[in-house]
Amino acid sequence: MNIPFVDLKQQYLSIKEDIDAGIRGVIENTSFVGGKYVKDFENSFAEAYGVKHVISCANGTDSLYIIMKMLGIGEGDEVITVANSWISSSETITQTGAKPVFVDIHPDYYSMDENLFEQAISPNTKAVILVHLHGQMADIETIEAICKARGIYIIEDCAQSHFSEYKGIKAGVRGIAGSFSFYPGKNLGAYGDAGAIITNDDELATKIRMFANHGALTKHQHQIEGINSRLDSIQAAILSAKLPNIHRWTEQRINNAALYQEHLKDVEEIVLPAVRPNSKHTFHLYIIRTKEREALMQFLKQKGIETAIHYPTALPNLKAYQYLGYTPQQFPISTQYQDEILSLPMYPELKADEIQYVAQAIKEFYKQ
Ligand SMILES: *Cc1c(COP(=O)(O)O)cnc(C)c1O
Image (cartoon, rainbow, N blue to C red; front, side, top):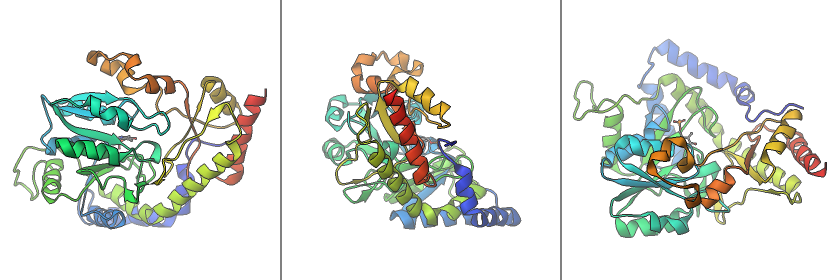
């Protein structure tokens, strides 16, 4: 049996007519950037999410940068982020002129350890990029209590957590703004690069819309210098065609995670993902931990099972951050886990017998 890590083709075929009609509509209307299709997607995402403003942009990296720029973050400032994430969560801090400050991950939930957050704060701390990794929200409640007392902004990186919840509140709604990626493999994915920012703050929303579009809300009226970070209409039409299915797909991911849990719970050599109490984990990724990662990965590959690593090097351990002078010992959990984590195939269309096949292969590996 061949089981890919993700299968975007299967999903396309299941909604082919809607997708094809959306793309055809854009081409026939020749409204390729901005216009009706983009507005429609922004409105339906705002409604589905229950937020006042959705500002689409080119990708989920720009969205972080744009939020920080419009909060006035720049040179001399520090922004705290987490040691295990995709590099967008830290490189955008540097892009603004500010300095990234890393915090180690929670040993059970893999997102920022809320108990280590306060000690990373300095008089220069302006914001925290709270990453809701793998589909599970970080402990935003504890972080928020610390930030409120000190006037630190919470920017939520929701690239992996569309519609995830903690204590009934969705990812991206509680902070000053939420940043989304619609990269093809994300839980809600376009067929190219795409992103969005959500916020309930009117003034910030206006600034963000302006900055992402060359500093202008109306053509030729540039009130500030901005950047060109816009969603193109074909991506917007694809996202609009996909959005009505997101809750069904999320439920399928959750069911698939439950099946993995059921099949693998007695395998002592691996650690399964833990779900934080009172939270809705949307399983963008299904990550196990094992001391025999490389061997297991090879074994599964021979069985036709594709796996991945998110991520093989913790951010502060990357060459790109050598200049900050951190040592791996400062991030013991991230440093240990970078050699142990393994992402198993996970997508809504994955079938019960395929999950059983993956689980069977893992059990076989430990029996030999
Ligand atoms: C994917 C991702 C991003 C970046 O999104 P792009 O759309 O690829 O720019 C940012 N943060 C996290 C945690 C991600 O997983």
